[in-house]
Structures are given as C-alpha cells and as structure tokens.
Length: 425
RNA sequence: GGAGAUGUGGCUGAGUGGUCGAAAGCGCCUGAUUGCUAAUUAGGUGAUGGAGUCAAAUCCAUCCGCAGGUUCGAAUCCUGUCGUCUCCGCCA
Image (tube, rainbow, N blue to C red; front, top):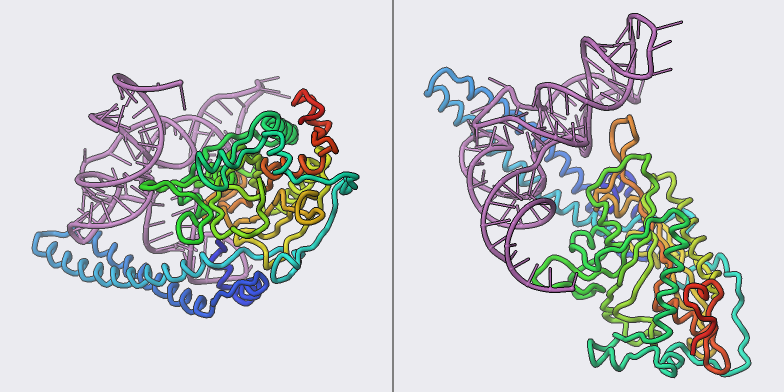
C-alpha cells in the first residue's frame, strides 16, 4: 500500500506508474474523495472537542437540574459528531479501497514495458550452456528412469500436481538446502524455520489474496489461516506490528519452509514435471532495511542468487523485470532464469529465483517500523525478498544440466562433501 | 480440547465512571554540582492523524491488546476476539 498523502500529492505520477504497469485503474475520484474526507475529519474533530468540553462541565454541575440541562446539550452535540464521523468513515472506506488497489511505484531504472517481453537481460552466469553429444532427457524422464520422482503416486495419494521424491534425489534436495542455509548464514542471515500456515491478514499485508476466485493460496476451512505460498509471508508476519531501532537494521533472515500454490488457471503453460507444482520446499532470503539501504540490499540479494547458481554450476541469465510484469508490491524485481536443456525443443530458460525490493509497500500494511535511536518519530522499514533455492526448480536445473550419456547425474562439487557422493543414478 | 488467571507508556507497575495520556520507580536525554569513571540534584522524556510554521513553538483529535456496546462522559462497566501464563487432558 502506498502512503495516502503521497498518492494525493503525486496523483499524476501515480497514474503514470499504473499505466506503465499495464494496470487499468481509475483514480480520478481519489483526490476529490480524499479532500472531502479531510474536511469531514476536521468537522468531526471540532464537534468532538465541543462535546468533550460540554461533558467536562457536567462533572462540575452545581445541582441535578443544571446537570440534566447540560447532559441534554452534550447529547445533541455528540449526535452531530456521530453523523459527521459516520460520513467520514464512509469516505475513508472508499479512499482506502482505492488506495489498496494502487501498486507500488516502480524504480526509475526498471525497464518500462507491457509484459515480460520487455524484460531486460542484464547479466549471465559463469557457466555457459553445455553442448551435449547425446540425446538429453528432461528432468522428469531422468527422475522416472531412476525412480526419483513419482507423480503417479502423488496423484493417487493427494492429487494431480503432487509428487513423491525418493532415493538419491532426496539427498540432493537436502544437500542443496544445507548448502544454501550455510552459505546464507555465513553472510549474516539468521536461519529461520517458519510456520507453513499464516493468518489471512498477514497474507494480505504481504500482498497476497488469500481467498477468492483467482487465488493462488490454499485456505483452511473455518479458520482465518492459509497455507503459505512462500516464506516471505511468514517472515514479514514475524515483524508485523513491531517497531525496531535503526541500530538493529538491516535484519537478514533465511527462511526455510514449504510453499503451497493452487496454480489455478496455470494449466497449459510450460509446466511439465517439477516446474509448476502445488508443493515445494524453498530457502528464502528476507531483509528489513532502512529506506536508504534497500537499493544496495537488493543488489546484494541478486549477487547472492548469482553466487549460489554459479556454485552449483548452472548456466543462467539475470533479468530486470519490466514495469508491466511487476507484482503490486514490487518496486524492482530481478529474476534468475536457469538454462534447462530438457525444456522445449532444444532447451529453454526457466525462472528459478526472483528478488524484489518492496520498499515500504508491505511494511505500511503490516505496520513494521523503525525508530532512530534518540530521535522522535518512527518510519516504515523497507522489505526485500529473494529466492535462494526453490528446491523443485533447482533440482530441474541440476538434473538436466549435469546429466551424462549413461543417465547418471554428476553432483556439483560444492555439494559433494554434503552428500557424500560424486554422482547419482 | 477443558478450567482458571491475565494483557496499561522503552521496562517494572499503580489506577473500578469525570480533574487520566495516565502515579511511582527504572532506563534514557539535557543542565548543575562534586576531581575520581560514579554519586547527588533540577528538568525533560510515547505514538498516529490534522491545523500551524521557512523551520520550530503551539493547538486540536485519537490511542491503556484488538473490535464493538452502554453512558453526556470509559483504562475503569458489558460483549466478542486475539495473545500470554498456570493447571488438567491428549500427543510426536
């Protein structure tokens, strides 16, 4: 959510930003509504003062007759105040409804464009895509060949899009987790295992819509909690309502959680195998910073993502997301797209990580603030998130890039000591 | 899951209908004092929104977990809700 005053004072920039984000939002009434609301607020506050003054006199009344007379007067003022208040509350709701629809402003350097076609490639990884002298398998064929991935069992047990992982692929999965957590912990991130469920109010604060036709989220019946789609939700929720001191910032967390996504409406998209599933494990980076630290932190998160994928010897490219392709809370977003040799006809890039600077968009809704030590007033922190490893997709990248002619898979060097194996299958 | 208790400012904690944004202590900040590294002393010290100002000062409204209700008036009474603690049950 953007600051109401900011929208009010920068309405044209906000409108332009909406257009750049390819969002059809009519904000014409915003300024009028907010002007009217402010007037009503002042009217209501003035009446409230009158009523308070009147009430104070009652306590000092000389006798019962006078007291009754004063009561009657106070009651009348109170009534007028209630009317003004009700009118204000109605306007306030209308303004808030509009305000909630407004996306974050975009970084001035973010490429402007309608959709992902306008995304800008800004870097590539250390490793180039391999040239294979044999027919490559995709990760699903490999996984099924070795008995590592079982979607049929998943469908039987749970439903379409669920899977079992088995055998050495599990060891690889755990090794990736271990590697990421220990790398992040060396870089000052606190390893954090979060709940896999969160309150709907927290989901909304982060920018997810927990219920409704378009939702990506599984919700729990009869309770106001939902399965999380990412640890970003719980890590943000961890500090909701909290005011920290500037000395504590930046706070860097490494979340470990399962992620659940309904993927409603995702049928037909390139989604074979583990690429688009209902449940996966993710190691997530999350940071709370002071406003002037968030740009640098965002670059750090991007660099860490690059380092991690370089370390597991997977080719990738880095993309600066176009304004039209940014989610509502994001000010700027970088994606790493890993080369997946088994995808499409001759290999394709597929998104494996995403890091966003959400500035104060989430913290305003979640009420996460900081205080400069020794100074008055509080400010909203900036929040940032970034994927370390989404395990399902990281596994695709490793299986497909490191496969051999005999269908075995070479384990990236950094993972070997953790797994105790050089090769699987 | 059952029973009971409880939720006040950075912290401890007083406050059962009006003079309470809220005692007191601690902490913190500023000044004074004593040469001994700390003590004494005076004062100050919350948030949000709004008015105001070049900026301040200042003024107004709201905030005692949260949301409602009763009342001219609520930290105080009522209802709901969330959190915490204790005991019991269950359980990995």
